[in-house]
Image 1 (cartoon, each protein chain N blue to C red):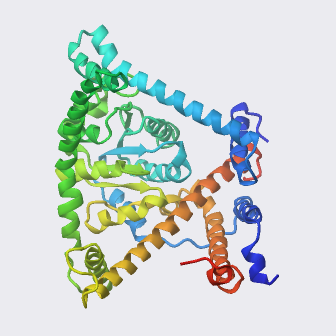
Image 2 (image 1 turned 45 degrees about the horizontal axis):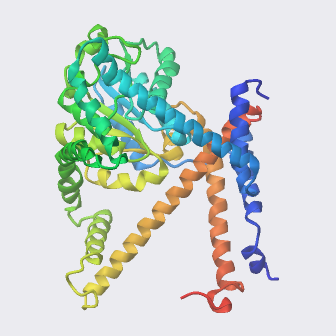
Length: 279
Length: 200
């Protein structure tokens, strides 16, 4: 058996073990591989940085635990930036599960920056409807959320004294796995001109590019890498930056195996002509 | 190592899921069934809480009788499960379709159509713009079936469009790999960070 025949027949479980080793090792002993900054990440940073002082921002983690590994570090990174700049935050979610992340972001990071519930941030309960809910926010923001997550009427929330309608919102930051960021773009950005930025899973990032190209989306963070880049920009290294060495090494392994797999296919004995298959 | 029961439960559930990579086994099946059961239970509870908080409580405690309309409409949707009265579900379904179409058309026409076309009308003064315009036009040519694809010129343009799509699919695949690795890294950070304290 030649080397390439061996590669072509290697048990996939050995590859899994190798992958886990390459991921765990840099997590335990960080290597410090360089991290290039993407244009879209910098655009998010500049958008947040350029907001007038004391702006009101909607922070919308529209995801469930399935996307937590990628989108939670993004949520933390941008929330750091918003709080460093002293902006006021309406934390809400179009997903029932997402409210948990809205709460966690405010309640874990808020105390570090002296943020007070009702004054500097407000957490909203889940409202069903997704695109219909976003559309309603555009028409009459105060009618969609009449009380906060804890049941306090918005008329008793000091921060809400400055919020009459969607034009008082300086920016929407949406973290999405699928269509939810589109709802903000279609119902708020396109109709009312409210700037939208945020992040998405790496899988869905190619689908964001047309919105960047058309100027509708003010940058976006792509997966764990985007979160790591933002952590570097706001000088708050966290989970994402810690995972970048592992990400790079795992990608290198995938590239090596793609090359080896193709060589095994081309040079080994399993070519279509050799086994009588193919088209 | 963690002494938290919840962390142990999550760690064992994670390991039972990953055990499938070795081969199908009882631990994986138990984990799979528990996951589906919890997800179903969670969905039912969230659904009930939404109905209760949004419509039922205002109806019964505040006398807001207008909430009867969506409640009855929702109940009618289940008509399709009963022989003979299935037609009643068409009323709320038609309403939902109408509202959905109206909401979608309002912003989508501008966001996904007009602004996207405008975003592609670029001056050909940079490589980025040239790639964008040529890629978009040739991909459209590939899907333009009114002209015979074998005709001289059209076939070549369609071929460029095909390559453009292949490159786009390759980029999408690369991002998919990155996303899956991120999920694995997240689990490893949990197992080696919060369960057994190997990650500082």
